[in-house]
Image 1 (spheres, rainbow, N blue to C red):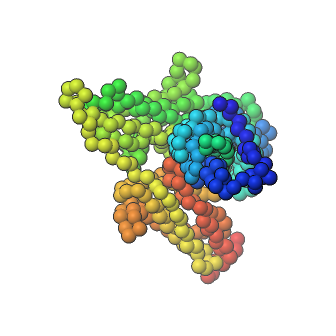
Image 2 (image 1 turned 90 degrees about the horizontal axis):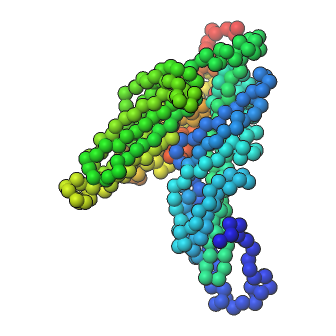
Image 3 (image 1 turned 180 degrees about the horizontal axis):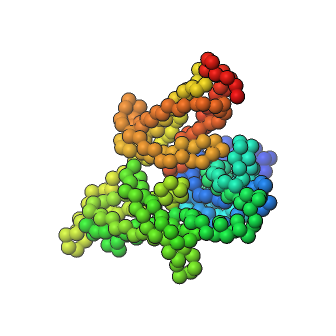
Length: 421
């Protein structure tokens, strides 16, 4: 089957108009919807400075995006789906040959495919310079990159291709440069001598048998700049986390440095969950890794099937509300409130995202059943001491994010008796 399908109707408008209505009925494929939505932790891309004055380019690297594909037909059969990152094809799958096609997909791509988004990443970094931030510091911000999902469908007689875009969040690390009065050679030596954590990854090795009880093995790996100590925690979907664990990074056989930790997980019942690791205080996190086992009961032979896996808690929607200061007098107070609709009761984690700034630490709230379903709520009071014009959003790992909500304060008035400096 050729990969590029024509979207042109096979009949001319004149010929189509000549057909009787009965002959036209059900002739063309009809899409109900075609969607591509992000899932998992946003990947990190790096922006570098070549002149020590501004950030100038995105570092070339491979990254992995995760998303969910959902194609539904009113009429016709899905025959083929493929995804492009700008002009580069990054996935191609034969369809399900029926009225629907859905799957979770890992989408390997590269910063070379970012095109205009690469310019946006550099601009987002340089916007930090206008806020009083120095280029000598590392900064974090965020952008989105667009992927286009194509779906080809057929009826018995005709073919049709449609597409839709999905916007995927990406974390941007703006790498600081040495101060101008520091000799370049000395600065390079200082950077080389500084311990840092470059990335985190997590993999899970399941037992070959589904008989229970059994044991799975989780391997956490942190790439570092040199030998040193890494302190991290394991997180589990739904809010569980381990105590802080400290391990040593050492030189590997390939000449690079890494800290590796293996954790055994007993599996006594059917399980369907996810794990990730987070370097404490460094903002370096891995993607989620799934552990799914149907867990046959070990009674000899095949045994009987255990109870089906528990459905993990999942965010369905997120909303943020902010009540700003009602006066121009500072210091002042603002109130931030979060609502997260879920599929069941339990703890769910989320992060606050500041527009043009880094993603915050993980916060957990407990969802309880209410008149409109299951809802988790969280509120926080903010103290404002200086003029402010920004916006915040709520991000729940798994692809759910609220709209950005503005927070402004003029601080035009001072406390009685206060004198301008």
